[in-house]
Image (tube, rainbow, N blue to C red; front, side):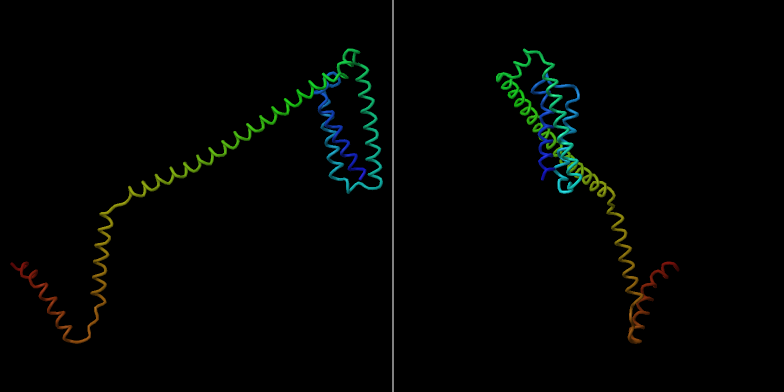
Length: 204
């Protein structure tokens, strides 16, 4: 429980440190963003791992939280004392904080608009890529069909069909079944009658 509260406090402190350059540039330094990110990381670790911290680790977390809070207070006091009286008055005034809040709201709005534009551009890019891939696949398929049609040869097919028919007729003749002697005599007479004109022609 204490680790969870310490983590939430660290998250709030890290967010404040990150917003210092935007809200109060007079109190900010060059590496405040880095240290704010470190404090945010500490807060996330404490919140997510609060169940594992018990006993001595919990005491160490409590002591570290107190030390970080004390050092942060001293640093903020030192930076406040380094400011001139005019700067201190301007920082305390309500008009200054209203202007800072307006600037912060404008910055957040710009960030949200930029994120929306990037999302729209990413969506358009994805749709273009998907449509381009679909068109590319269609263009690849159409030449394949035309190439297949170019290699079609009707003459070769007719020749193969004629050869097939001759083979079928030959197979039917080879597999002819004779059941009587009369059928044998008829086949012999038919073969002699078919070869007789050829022989007469050769003799002439």
